[in-house]
Image (cartoon, rainbow, N blue to C red; front, side, top):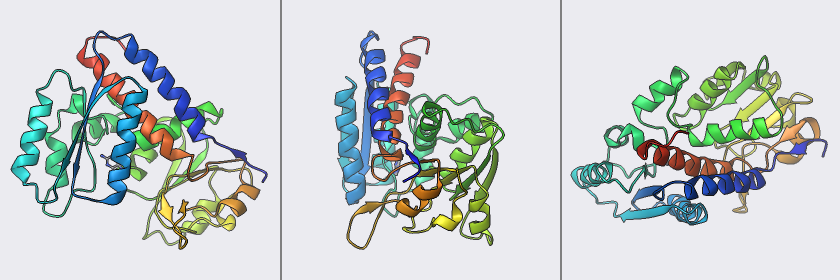
Length: 283
Ligand code: GUN
């Protein structure tokens, strides 16, 4: 393998240590409420790991595991109650929500100062103009990794595969704010292979195993794999054909152990930011 491995696990551990130190310096523990509606098994795993992260960072946490039959009013009432609590700094509603519940309505109900996912339209707007209260967790984690490894997007050609609200769009904005020249590709992009192969920094967030083959990686590129897929054998993998891409890339993230742990660490960082905001402590 020619590429340097970007170790998200190690960097996330370091970030969480810093967050813990920040939390210990506050008059009151940061508090995070996580709401899970329904029984999506992947969501269940995410929520459990968030609880562990809170313990590790010395946070107070609450978890609400609600049945898929939860009504719109019950969910909105829960969010409204958490908005009013002084011991809760961050509110996270795990997505996707079961059919019948309107994600946009629920995200809009969260107090923007407690929106540690950075999904509320107010925070998305702030992000767009380059002044966000919080960093969107996954793209923010990617930016931390680039910084740690001395990779500056300024003047680089950055190609983002995928245009989701959670990853693709905010990723493109963060790279743009870091002065990258950003190209966004999606399922209707005809020349996706050629565009990917032109990238100095390639970020894949599509969710399709085997999508990024070696011919789509420029010699010396930085390859960031955001996806969390399972292959036929049930093994966790990303979008990138890792072994062949690593032969050409200068830097590459593994799956697992790359972007995933950074997303979780960024949630802790955002919760600390929210706690500072609520306690009148400067960030
Ligand atoms: N579902 C998948 N990723 C995320 C995330 O980052 N936040 C929330 N709330 N739900 C998700």
